[in-house]
Image (cartoon, rainbow, N blue to C red; front, side, top):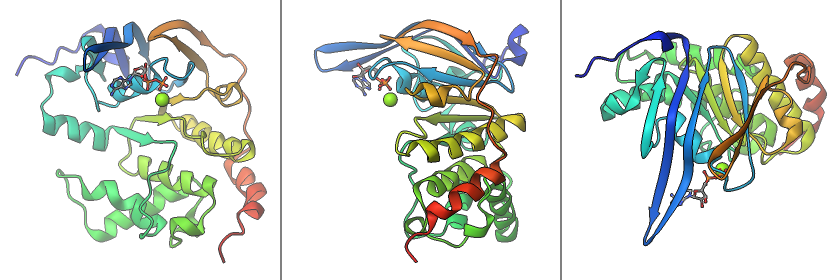
Length: 263
Ligand code: ADP
Ligand code: MG
């Protein structure tokens, strides 16, 4: 294999160099990304903003190694992902990156704990015993403040709690990077705050977060905002004063009363 040149970019979690993406839909070519370059360092919390159709999800798919650029280079932790084979990419998606989506994507027939354990079943290196799996899943649920709902099914949980289960699932393999595409898009504003408090607490533990949103209130929790328009970056700015979140526990206590659900 070609040497996985680790150069001066060693410290970047994400390095994009002139990345473009063209979708071919029949006769039509859609340029979803056009010469996008930036880097994200360890421990950053980045909000990715832009109108619908500006290329946010396309960019997230590339960052998550779910899709490849048509041109340009993507280095993840200094490794050019185009040099990796299918199995290596699957390992990276499973171990190094946590994904959170707008529509939680939980399995309805299994408990919160079992949903969180799921990514551990796809590890083909270092297989874990059932007991180890449950321990890691419980720890992940604890990080999102949901230990007491471990045995609930998704339909017994509020939207915010379901999203927290999905975040725990994203954390269970201990990724350095979490990618979230409109994680609050399906939630009311108070619950969005609760979820952003969770992301903020994860970031305080050192996890790098890239989060897509089109709401300024949500972006305010991040420490840097990158804006896309028609597939190009139109601004990239640090935010010196972020929305201070209440501690996760306190936020949860405040929202618990909303969650008196299907009992
Ligand atoms: P956003 O997430 O910001 O709404 P997307 O990344 O989903 O934007 O889309 C960017 C552009 O690429 C849009 O014009 C969209 O229609 C187009 N696009 C996205 N996915 C595909 C696809 N699979 N095939 C063809 N065009 C696509
Ligand atoms: Mg999108």
